[in-house]
Image 1 (cartoon, rainbow over the protein chains, first blue to last red):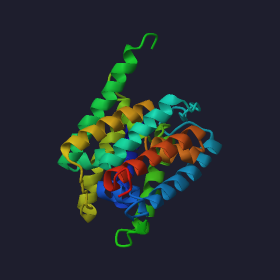
Image 2: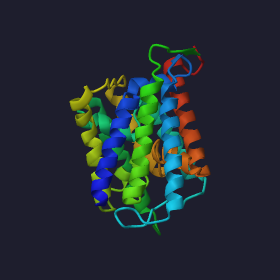
Image 3: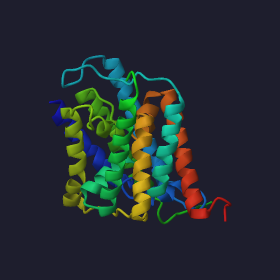
Image 4: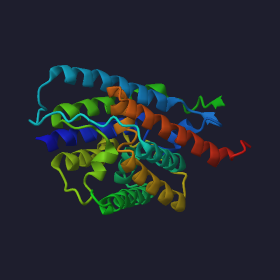
Length: 141
Length: 144
């Protein structure tokens, strides 16, 4: 049940990425290029997504019940703003600016068969694997 | 800074954003989970095992370009970066999003929508890094 609901959500999420232009790296770089001819479109993607999510999440908080699949709603508990968060975000932003891909759009483009997206996704998975490797080796974790 | 009026398309952007938001709300309602792509992918890699909802979400995400293609024809996906840049960028995005515990979706959409200060900080940093990187690559460090 959770898998089926999640599948539908993934489909809607991906269609949203494609419709909005987020899945097109050239469009993303046009938004990130403040020094050239700036295309502010993607601010509307974020605005629309955050507004709808904020309203929906507020309703879900008030609703209080379990998810439709039966389990509790798992809201993130972390609140600390630490070095890992900031350094990680810095590295992520640099990679995003280099290629114009963030994780969701890269997966959609790879699934569409765009060869450069497959290269990016393979490297991204390697980066995530590297993180697991480093963090798993640490004593006490 | 000049505006790229030819490329500016606020309505599809807004409509796409609304769909992304709907998907995030539905995932929390249906499966009780945050729609953070880097976390969903990262959670599938060893040492952690797979979970049905993660696989389901990624399956739906992977089907989206095919459904889109059937209904309307796939929109342009234009990649300018060469292979070396793509590899470097992918590594940075993979490592960075795991250390930051989130990306554009988990922090930038869901986190901001929850009013999380931690996600505001992450989003501010990755947006600033994105702007700075594109500026450096396209216009040089000196602003030429």
